[in-house]
Length: 348
Ligand code: KG4
Ligand code: ZN
Image 1 (tube, rainbow, N blue to C red):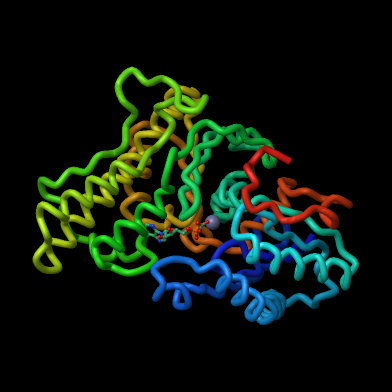
Image 2 (cartoon, rainbow, N blue to C red; image 1 turned 45 degrees about the vertical axis):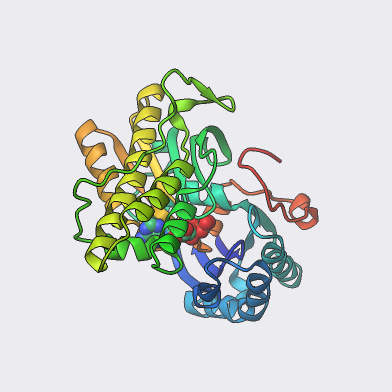
């Protein structure tokens, strides 16, 4: 079974061909970072227009690099949401057109669910049936969520951020530090090898005594707005002089986010009693975070499955994989349903 995946939910125009759920035959990604960078964030209409311009080329590239002919594609999978409306419409229209032209079935995939399942794209990963159920973390520019993933297509929300996503917090902090967009890679780069010294930023723990936040266990939730305020205040009180000073602050900021993420994962594993964890999403590419999660897992004897770095940021291989694992909406509905810009995992 060969699946062509299409992803256009945000600022990556991506297409990939997979054989089954694991074997990635091609993975083409055009990143729009250079287009949005000067604006300090994603401009939705620019993103949609760029998808329109680049998707035909990326689709041809993915199919050509896979070594398959168009006729050999057995299914098309596409992101239906969540994401930017104009961006999603571009990908869904192209995918539906291809499904009609090739007379092949279409699957609609939830972007966050694809990140949840992306750790299984690792060649060394066990099969989902052998690893699930397990707590699963997604940390990206738009989402910071913890689910109990019972099976592909069957996830229960355990925790989430109450305000900014971790990637968004990185992006805002980088702007405050004058490091450009996207902020995650910029902060990771400057913080590499730097020590925070005595600088400590808050990790957004719930107030003592708070048990539940919006119906979720308080210990499984994040808040990154206090961290941003703390950084603003610190910069106001100690304006950094020189690159080394900026690097120390960036390292302290990164450390606070890494600690916040590891703490919540540890709480979920402790409470669920399931000694396994999956993690994916754009921020999981962060080397410090990968190391901290790895150290914690090794110390506690937790089976940790991280998404391979090349499938952390937005890509279409994870979309095709999610469809292959049965997590997509298939059948007639896939040819009829509209895009879903705020689609939550586990809802229709
Ligand atoms: O998953 P993704 O590509 O898009 C969304 O679905 O949001 O994630 C993008 C996010 C951005 O906020 C970016 O700053 C962050 O991932 N990011 C990083 C790193 N590389 C990308 N954050 C921390 N460290 C990195 N090395
Ligand atoms: Zn994403």
